[in-house]
Image (tube, rainbow, N blue to C red; front, side):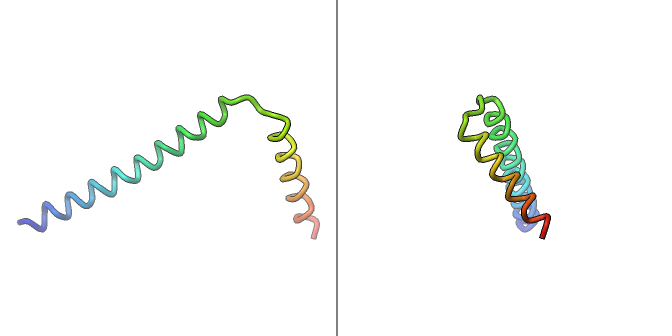
Length: 58
């Protein structure tokens, strides 16, 4: 029955790792959206939009 505990342990460890990564990404997004935008951020957004529009035309 040792194999049952190994499978159960590996499954729980994988589930914990996935949930931890999802929580970290959600927390990172929330922190980034709470920060005020700077002029550099706005310039980067404009450049990204222009680049995506240029790629869509070709």
